[in-house]
Length: 221
Image (cartoon, rainbow, N blue to C red; front, top):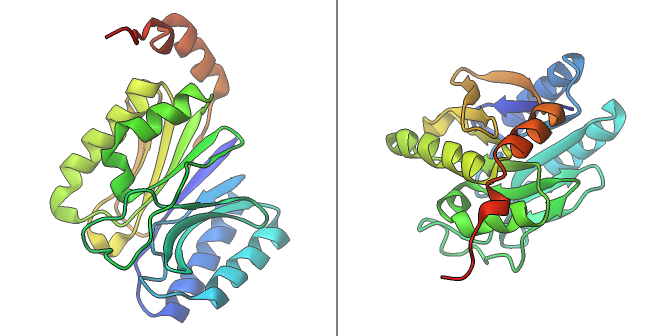
């Protein structure tokens, strides 16, 4: 399966939506089956019209969209057109009005997460123990901490032997990243656009068979 990361900045609501729709079409033309958009794509403002427009476009193009947006007081990563919606379990310091979610969401082998969730390894390990092959992370990570972002993204992938796909908002100053199960960075996006990478299940299975980290876990201490 080909996964696309959409790296774009928030401008006006309508302007952001127009660029998101163009990037969605570009990703589909490059053979992507799923496009991951950043956290708070439309800012910390509910914009149901934008969500509906992307949902309709996803249905028309026959592609999945993972969209970060605010809905009903929760920071969400929603799978469009007809997938589940994950509510962020760990709201950040600048999200005092956001209600935390109640449970992780694992969808078709993908563990869902948002930004600050990356600091909490327990969430990603719980996904791995339930069979996750990859993590989808929407983010609006501050540029001053972009080195930390890469450290955490590579660690979450490597310690769980899973792909990690992370889409950042360009205006926050941090890149979007795709990381292999061995912790190697496959893709780094800093300019606005889409980047498409392959989720190679053959590599994933072979790597896990060679280094069965999760089977070597000890829980007696």
